[in-house]
Image 1: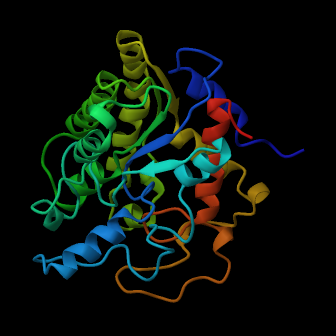
Image 2: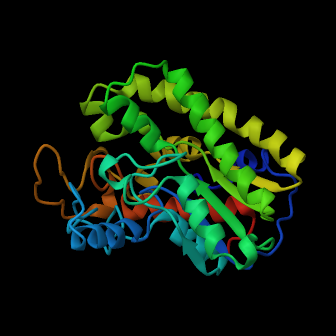
Length: 305
């Protein structure tokens, strides 16, 4: 019998929840970046190009599946399917945990950061109130680090981690104040193994950043959940990735560190067996890894079909 990728994650997620038996949700609202974007950045950048916005480019482009930053559906889409819920996805590729985007040319056009995404949701919500029976999914932080590392910011990485944690808690707080009662917050991805991060000599910085989030965010969310009277399930994405790497062969993965579809410094031909790869490009997981993550998230909520 092969080891399960799901079993230990249930315990980790419930550490930040307020109860073992989750309620039945009526909808799923998602906020985040390219790990959860189901086409928003494709639609937005096409719109910007049509309006001839300066420096705009189409993202993610033709190397990707139907506007996802991968070769298939994202983890939150799989989660929605597992829970049999309709999904309203506000995530935008490049989004940061507070305001704006890694791609600075988006900033004058629209605030695509999680704060702006929540603005858009509350504007569309009836009376500006959040649905108390819905599940609110927040998965954000990677672009905080990418901007920091790629543009040589000088502040200590601990300050960056503290800012990301504050922004994530603020996002939960804003939605809770508007009436949301049920949350899944996903911790940092394993940035330190990303092909682009390794190639750029940024792995040690990434490891420090993600470990700070992994160590500090769950406890803060426990306290916040008690203060605001909300249920918060924390999904430890690093623990998920670590376990997947240890049991890669059992899941049919044979290539953990190279992208199936190389894009940098130049585009190359994609691999022939993407489901054997952890990474689609130098930053993003394949549909296979997204699917495994989405199923693990549903298991953590105790509501997998």
